[in-house]
Length: 211
Image (tube, rainbow, N blue to C red; front, side, top):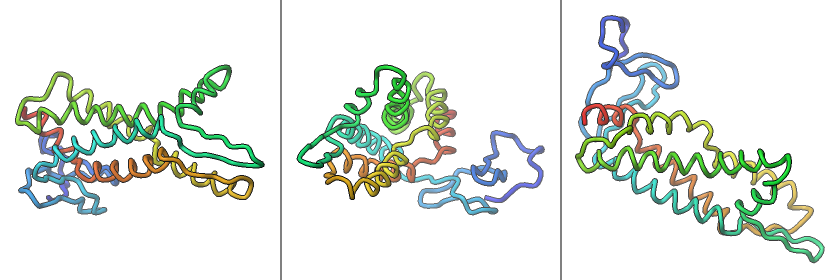
């Protein structure tokens, strides 16, 4: 794949832009086991992998199961001066669901729960028929585009980092025990990273248009 210096002479459908440096390249169908990187910044552009769609679907289902556990299972337990309090993500959000803090509870649930789950569901909806050699389902292109636009707002990873920083600060004031929901979130981050490694946006768009 070579960087083109005259993109105006090419069909826009044949071009792919690097998401990092915006360099334009001629898009090509690659054989399995090969990769295409940006010639300028070496960002990975096209990753055709055998049965990669099935891998993404399986990891998306796994992510949703982990998210259910992360929401309702105990997230952490704090003990201080003989008092113990156990909380879950859902319980904390509901505790702030009244009054002027309600928008905060809504934002927390949306960014760390609703949007990641929507992106999992969107990938399953988009890739399920393609993985089985069938035409894309209705509105698959729109749903996949919405999932990509919502990616910056999916902040489960940021939530875990913020929680870790907060735990360091309160460790000297109380005894903190991490619950299963915390570890479910950690595994969820790993699953999401693996899922992203199998996702090639150009390949998905190409399959949607062809089928």
